[in-house]
Image (cartoon, rainbow, N blue to C red; front, side):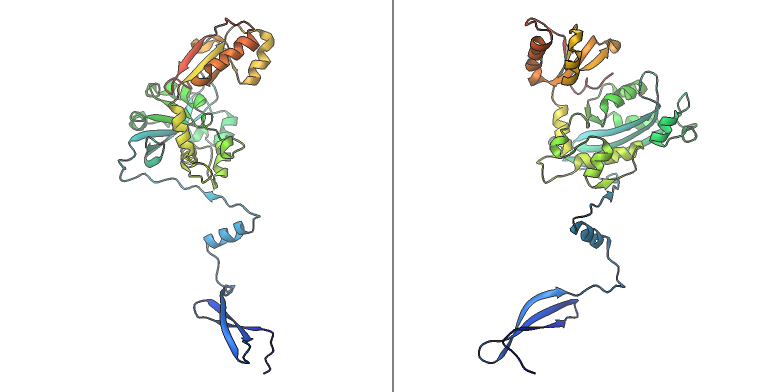
Length: 341
């Protein structure tokens, strides 16, 4: 066999499933030399299926696919760690409609967990999920939304005692739309009234976390999961994972941000007797209309963090009332007051 100056390669298969590649070439002395170059993985036999992890790695590696993992609920801890001394509740309700004065709760889901003063989530300590038969038939649009039918709730009653075992010791109650859930819960059970509440929808800056929306299903998908939505306790577990998720792009979790927000005092400003011609300006700035029910003034109103109070009053006096001595009513709110009806 003639050997030329140009190099040629030979491959020897190893029993470990790799191949060592050598370069055979003339070293200038007329002798041939062998140098190991690299180890190459032998192709998988067609009869050996890929594992789930290998399939995920293969698809995501192409850059053309994004894989969502089914969200698995956290188990209830058998031992509660002492380094997480605070107790939190994630809560979700399904109701017969939107009005807490006339509609009723048909399902409530609760996930209890612990956390520390920095807002780090600890252990799941309990769950509750219960259905309740309302005094009227469930509207068709609610059945389509929740999947809960009259047959499912027939004869069902929420176990108030079991619910209170989780609610009573809680330091903070979280709902993804606390302005909706809190009035329903307080109308259903007075124990909810004396608690601090936080809203994971409005009190977290989701846009700075790269989210273009705040709906729970969207946030779950952004976190790389999918889940069975619109059932109360499933949504609670999903929200817990979204809040506790560590993100390399952000120094703190969403729950840590929410925990800090819940400790801040806010101020509700009522633009009472504001000129009608400026209603669109107020609406565009984020003011909402109060019809005078529940003891509130009949006026446009907004909530701001306490440090921004003077700036907002200055805006009203300059742009809306156009009177420097205007003194619209204000009300200071903590987490114990916010999101009430």
